[in-house]
Amino acid sequence: MTDRIELTGLRARGRHGVYDFERANGQEFVIDTVLELDLAPAARSDRVTDTVHYGELAERLVAVVTGEPVDLIETLADRLLAVCLAEPLVSAATVTVHKPEAPIPHTFADVAVTMRRTR
Image (tube, rainbow, N blue to C red; front, side, top):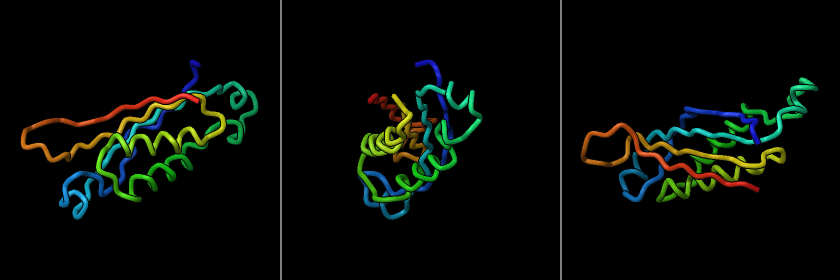
């Protein structure tokens, strides 16, 4: 599949992490998603019902990030993938979860986990 919808840099505050202070204080997570699907029907019809409404998808993804805490960003990425693959038109999805405020005692730019799943 060569058609894609990308939603990148989606920010939400969550309470994910293995440390108590991460759960208590929360931190910002940044989500990047790539949805693979056939966009030809939407291009022909010019109707949002023939594609994935990325605004509504963003709301569902933010609800996961701000929802029930998990220890690992791997688990969070898996839950976000489930949301993406719940879209009937999506044949594959890639999710990257960035944790730029990870509790690492050294200077770093980012920590991220990327997972891809297909139907």
